[in-house]
Image (tube, each protein chain N blue to C red):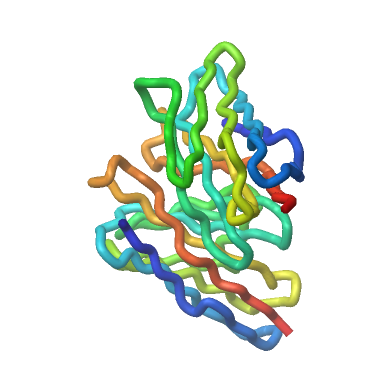
Amino acid sequence: AQSVTQLGSHVSVSEGALVLLRCNYSSSVPPYLFWYVQYPNQGLQLLLKYTTGATLVKGINGFEAEFKKSETSFHLTKPSAHMSDAAEYFCAVSDKTDSSYKLIFGSGTRLLVRP
Amino acid sequence: GAVVSQHPSRVICKSGTSVKIECRSLDFQATTMFWYRQFPKQSLMLMATSNEGSKATYEQGVEKDKFLINHASLTLSTLTVTSAHPEDSSFYICSARAPLGGNTIYFGEGSWLTVV
């Protein structure tokens, strides 16, 4: 079964600093990979996804993520944090062999941005 | 972009009653919708996969008789929490797959259920 691990339940950075949120998946066949953001009491918004092709994926709000098969990772980065980036971030995977495309989520990482 | 709407956004019901939450895809047809449950400060737990015109597929440990899912049309899925109890209080989120949009999954805004 697919699973995804997010290291660090909380990450705190200063405004303007680099953001790095970690995500590792566990499956022999690389799944589809996603990053979602959730603001308080709201649903989820897709930041970016990797399905095939270029391993460096650019998303909205200046975020990007790189798929590294050798490390089974899909870490999310942003060069310079904004106060508005403070939110909960979820990495998710979807099994390529599952025609339903259901998403399995990691435990989430809360990003705190200090002024 | 694609929009998924959930209604109601907040609902309070008495213990023992049933409550229905609707999930609609507003500008695309969704043959597959998903229902998740999220406890405060926790991740989303997939409850079931809802396919239009067929029975939902429930994840292990989810009571199908308690959480009734109906996907009667390509734009509407409903989750009914039957005989609700306080422990059913949670944030319920639906999502819908857009097959013509690269199978991207779009999420609703979620529904807060409080059972008193």
